[in-house]
Length: 66
Image (tube, rainbow, N blue to C red; front, side):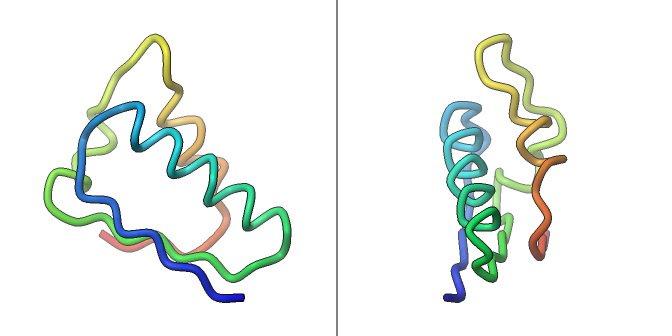
């Protein structure tokens, strides 16, 4: 199955949970793409002690667009 996530937020919890879901689909061998839009393109500057956004992003093995 082909799956597309469009993320347009810089909210750490939302980014973290979306990427956890994207990584779950990749692990199940689906074709996953993530497109960052608006505030989503600033994901690298998002910091949170509770949500490891960068860790989930770095784990992602699908197609990634900004």
